[in-house]
Image 1 (tube, rainbow, N blue to C red):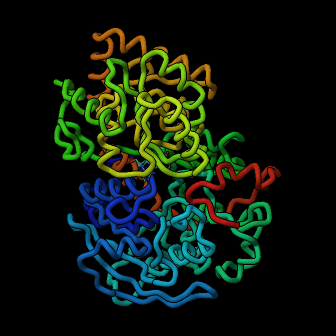
Image 2 (image 1 turned 60 degrees about the vertical axis):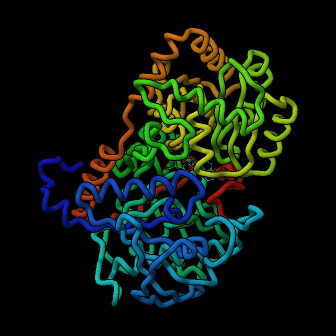
Length: 516
Ligand code: ADP
Ligand code: GLC
């Protein structure tokens, strides 16, 4: 890393970053990527960096806009169709470039899937368009009048941008941030021509992954630097268990100093003292207002009046989140006088499992199947404890939200959960992903709940813990200044261990996994 003293204030001010993402909380959200895409650019701008967002103009994005000017047009390539580039600004002035390609993006559904939850069949073209637009804007487009110094892309959906830059001979450096390596954007090899991928890039040290095209691997191969969203996850993905078949490549990047873990922060909007969604505000000096929130959520979810602890869950309902462990121990939590409030949507099987649970323990377990920001804030504010038995968690934001709102997280010690929860001080961590280990942590929570002084002390420590974005933003700025002076790396030449794609693609039915 470049020492801070070598980075002049003038240098930082002039830094121009194109932030390429498939989600941006102001306009389109499926999970934590949207939150990060909204908060990190704002933190960078506060520190003087000229960050601009590039994303697809989904139908629900267009629905939210007041003003949109068309500022450029981009040609098509192979089966990737031409598009227009629109420019808008958020209410607080962040420039956002939108890719206007109605046949690709103007549909109802999530950024990745149909309203019924199936991946769009043309996700390869939809997100190749995103990557190619980023590369073209980086090279300069008439009418836009702005060129980035660095292209910073996020997750597989944007990960072809570094590759298109490299194949076009551009020297504009790029950074890929992995938010979840389990989702790679895997497509059949016969899509090479359609996606304008040169045939000689289809090799193990290029875009090929077990005879398929991998968008994520393309990004990992051609980006100058790779980051991920916690130090522990950066380490975990160099190993077989969480490397998703790319552990060889990840270890190589780590040993070349091209893989960095930078933990996410938490947006200042998450403040129980001012939160407009809450029936009653509270703060670390006087958290007694939590009781009113607890009563309100209890009523909303038809929970019986109770003196026992409330365990909250706000989550995408997917395999990654380990909610089967909650089903395994729910009976014991209820028997001990606990209640569970669940807000989430996602995989119909997980949803059904939780619905069955709420029927079996009527009055003690309540489920809201769906998602709303207001309800998310309320459940977090109401909870005494917050359940996160994730199988893996690159960073996780909800455990930070929970701590700030005095809900002590009970979480598997993995990825960002291990990095942002202090066991026994601000929450409870269990190490082995098992029913017993999770139950043991919940028993510790019951003991703390029964000892009011201890509960007050842990709650106060958790609520006062800082998770601001300023530190992470400084780390990204240091990385930007370092990368801006580096030549395009040669693709690494190493062979991946032979892992069948089925095994490697953990959670393939989840969000951000492409149909193959
Ligand atoms: P992930 O990105 O893996 O879902 P994070 O903890 O990083 O996990 O981020 C979750 C963010 O998304 C939180 O702000 C949470 O309130 C929100 N969220 C949780 N479930 C959903 C959902 N089903 N749809 C949209 N947003 C959700
Ligand atoms: C991904 C990860 C989550 C992380 C989020 C934002 O969705 O699953 O752990 O917090 O991205 O980086």
